[in-house]
Image (cartoon, rainbow, N blue to C red; front, side):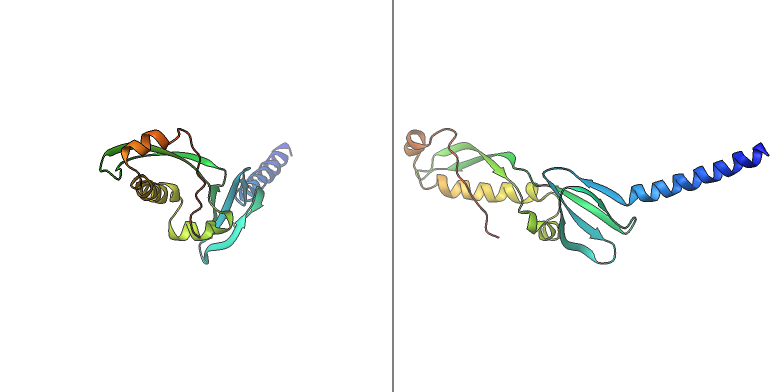
Length: 155
């Protein structure tokens, strides 16, 4: 009699564990300051951007790709030339964040490492074009340390 009770408790426990595992694999969390894009095995990247909180997905069919949408700093060192062809070693400190509504497009066209692939080339080209307008003397006397410039990239 006791053996049958323990056997039924064991089966119930196993069924409960399997059900809990399925429910756990159907949930995912998006932390504060982050957004998620859902990749579906059949439909590809969905156009919906998911905000913070706990959300459901179809296990083994959908996968969340989570992006950090907070302002993030980045240093970009550049060696360039001034207007009078003097070498200038300058480091640009930028703050960036992705536009949350464009995350599906960013993921499909560039990937999760968009900042590593896009920011160095854009900032280098912009910094070179700005530094090339001035000669070395102007850069030394007029370029304040720690000056902030807001740059918004075209959509």
